[in-house]
Length: 485
Image (cartoon, rainbow, N blue to C red):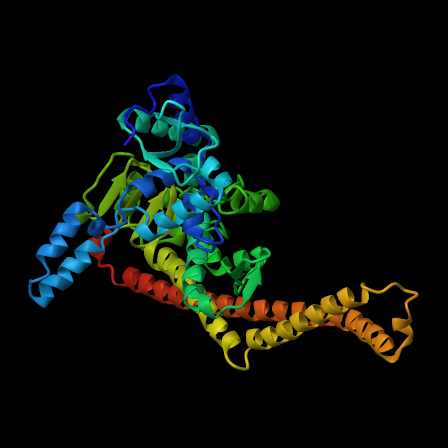
């Protein structure tokens, strides 16, 4: 450990600068978390990324967890199962494997080492006086553990850089919209659905010697379009698609607050601004929701405006600074409310979750069909192999013919003429095969997309119908005493 690092002004400045300029996205996502949407979101913030690398991944990664596991080795089997479950409780940090992958990338690529940071460490080289010093031209593998003072400088730089780039705030702004959360959930579902098939996917060259695995939905438009079942379900639940019974229009008419005099502005307000109408006065509300008593209406309205923190969910509701709250006595049944958006559990949350899970399951089903012996990907791989062989043959033939001058007698002989004819045929066939290969890729992607949307829509519709049936049953079973409480 270099306790002296950070005491010299130039070292302290460089350590601070390392933290300030760090950008987790410089790590090659193709190798580490390339398709994981949640990991990709976390990498928007240098502060969150540094925190996750400093924290243990689960209870078993801590010193207490390791000691606990050792003491449980001779315990009965049922106790070991409980111990394993406790040890696997996540603590928010990265796994040791992932941390090591980061370090390997920093060691192999000086540019990554320069643009990222290894929390608690820096790279140094020995000065002419035999002391370690921070330097931009230091070898990345020369990691030096920082002392307390230097760690504080590094953490200050990371925090300052995150504030300047709106790292954490970008994540918060993104998660403010329920539809964005639904999109993220669906993307994560697709990632988890596709992950077991990764090793069977064909390789894609990304350099002279490097390849990565292809994806079932490589096109961004298809991936985002596949999230629509969950997004639509969430939008309906929060009132962004159509007016809910008992609520005003966003731009209400003076004659009838249920209707809008500006349909276009109403649509734009719901779709782009994410707005939804407010509760009607009870006299008007009861015309559409006669099952809700005046007392229930009053309690619910008080709940929606309540900003007082309540961390006890066992009394039927909870409230976290007014930003996240929930109740079992909502006018549409149990609900959660996030940043003023009320989402019923039965008809909103569960259908969106089912849509995200169904989308991932559908993508996996589609992928298995495509990877079957007679599936689309298998056929496309055959075309791609033949194409690669023809391209290699063309390159060799072009190199061979390039050794001769146009006026050489070689081209007048039978072999030279045959080579020229073969080259001409290859020049004609290769573009055709490339077109066939791309057409098969597009067809495979469409099939995977349709499978994901089919199962996602099925999960959404079936769960929404079941949720609506349960909500209707709940309303019909309310006793007069409950309605007047």
